[in-house]
Image (tube, protein in one colour):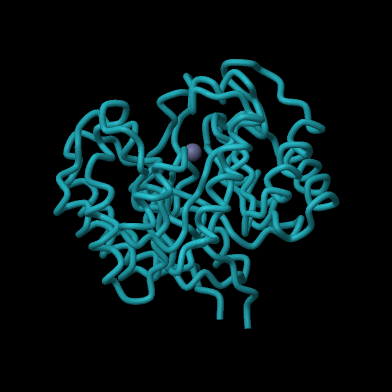
Length: 306
Ligand code: ZN
């Protein structure tokens, strides 16, 4: 039996927020269903942010409600503040992800608050969620943990400090995010190790972008440090509207290929992902879809992990 690795698809959130056009809600829901069909069990389906800022996410409540009906799917949504968390809870999300930037400059651009003020916001969110009758998981994303296009270098000690503050606030899990994709494998290895020394397995996930072409190498470094959960986006969509220079997430298809080839069971079917790309393309006719597996075709040597 291969060891299991969980893939969390973030295309409908991270991918679409930077798209030039707005994907119609019905296609978005069909796309999410096609991802579930391919074996993806957790999807970040949108974000509860003001539609004025990110119009692509205006239909998130409706998308969450439709996604809840999909069998076996954990429905996640990104929320920057308490109001967003309340809307996510009301729509029935299973998980919320609250971003807290390690870089002060990105934090102000992304949430209009300094890092520590955003930690305080997060604490309020955790307290509110825990007081509700219906449980909802609260994860926190340490954004710009490996570098920032606004501030440049992000010191590792600061990442550890912010991650410790998030764990202290009582979140279920912490995600380290390479928001702009400046990280390298040795840095990922050292940072994961340092953060785990501080907060242990509460750090359970990496969110990587492929700006410099090091996304999969960084994922491998995390895997070797014991991380068993990764965010990725179908066709490598993605980017952050408040972090200039960020490009797409690591490509779900290529990540699945790497993991399954190495004997890690993801439960995801590559042919199913390729079919999901067709729905994505229909919803975003002009968008360039990335991915080596699709470009080259699935090799005859490919075997899924047992
Ligand atoms: Zn991202």
